[in-house]
Length: 290
Length: 233
Ligand SMILES: Nc1ncnc2c1ncn2[C@@H]1O[C@H](COP(=O)(O)OP(=O)(O)O)[C@@H](O)[C@H]1O
Ligand SMILES: [Mg+2]
Image (tube, rainbow over all chains, first blue to last red; front, side):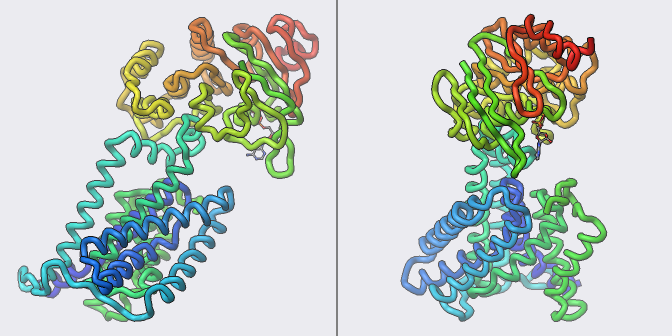
């Protein structure tokens, strides 16, 4: 039982991060039909920028804020200079563009930062909290709380404001959105900005636990994508549930089978979803266009 | 009010409009009739700015608008009820209406919502229903209501009678006529030429991307070729 709880705690923690990355995928996919494989780089930019700014003596809260702003700037540039000029290109071409952007950002990070692993001090120390024979790091609770706050804020914003409804409208019917006067390009920019911010915050919160480096984004994008697929591409609820489920699956596979299988779980999930339930758990028929 | 001159538009390399010119005077209903595939939808989409054009000009109130993005054209006073309704299916009737007034966001839109509900009481009864769950007739009413929310001066309607039962067709066309009496200028695209000509002031016939006949609705109605091709007599 203690073992089970232990795996569950670690699964929930990484699952929360996957959920946030998947949420970023979902937002961008809904607003602009783009599957953004540079999503993981937002997480990397958040963590690495915070690390290097704190190393330079900037206080942690300010460093974190600047890191989020930096990620948003990168997200907006990606949309403005790489995605928008290719508007109308096929989904495959757009995916290639985001993969290219991801490679470029990783390369740039090697130059701007370095190739080593880095950590950040946890917010509430390193003393594990013991629950039912298992232990959980205070920082894990910070990650979970952060994820909950982000999800709730996003939900309130999308569900309760006219701007949020316009995001849904753009996702549901882009032509109709344009015909009522919604600037769908701005909706696209907005989704890239918000996704970048969410990714960066996830990166900052999780760095004290998982460490960060210039290339953490690659695997995270894959995991986030698997989570989004599992939940059903386009569904925000699905992204969150898919992320948590993937995190748990990974943790149990690593715990009960072998840690070697951990990263294979995401691939397996992608394959199973593709073959068995292409709409995922909460998805609509929209997936065919990917 | 609206003046389209020598407009050409293409899908890839295939040209769908080959130099179309039409005029819509303030306060009129102008109808554009033509067979399936003639280019009617393409023309309306070009006027709304959601279909690229390759040449020609579009003037609204004398000002060229062909370079404006679609949202600026809505703000200028042109809205469209697109072919196939194109509602925001997951959103409620009321949210669809509110988004119809997106170009006036920040303004109080309750009077317009009340006006639409007065026009289509059915929409009020089902105001919390997702648009995707409505019947064809209700969807068409909502599509018209949503387009009215922007307080347009020119309303483009693309086959509003398509797929509706005859009694609903009459009701929708009567509503359109009523909007005109309220001062709205209307460009009405219809395959149902008889019904459209009955309420129109002027008419154009579009055939494979070219205007082939035009005049007052009465003139077009008695045109021999039009009678044969579109009125089945
Ligand atoms: N998305 C599209 N891609 C390619 N060709 C199109 C597209 N939409 C319409 N067309 C072509 O353009 C022509 C005009 O179509 P359309 O404007 O829809 O006609 P209408 O509304 O009068 O039925 C037709 O020949 C049609 O096949
Ligand atoms: Mg048509």
